[in-house]
Image: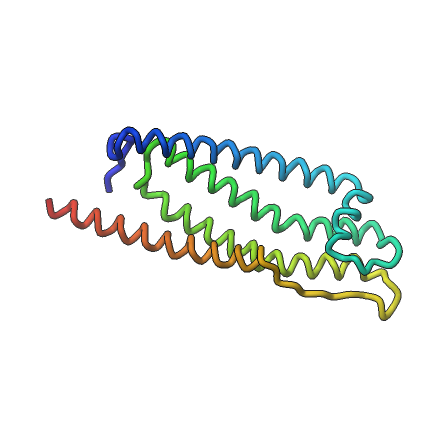
Length: 186
């Protein structure tokens, strides 16, 4: 397998891709920092956390026990962790693009991981919201506890984008295999 650098693509194309990739890398890092900061901000204060989580569970009667609020916060953190991992993969992928390594052998695996993370985020988001609502309404009087399962456009988008990335990873991997096969004939 060959390892290529910027010389394999036109200079003006490399410059354009490098500018976009640099911006995407910075946005990914900024997203990770903001995600970690906002998670810490919410998890350190149960009043703020409850206020934030109450958007998902409007049927709260009274104040849930602090342990339930913290548990709901930890459950709500799982999709955010998946998003942070996806941002890290995006940063690595665009780092390769910035270097001009658009045909690097690691790219299909990165795309596949991004696809897995997106599909997982879609599924985990549905489950996490359901559990958050359950935990926050568990202290409600009998008959007023709530379990709600909802599938939103974000969940569907995560699933579709994840499957698209997963399929694209297979296409890239197959095109690399064909290119390597053709190179061996020359």
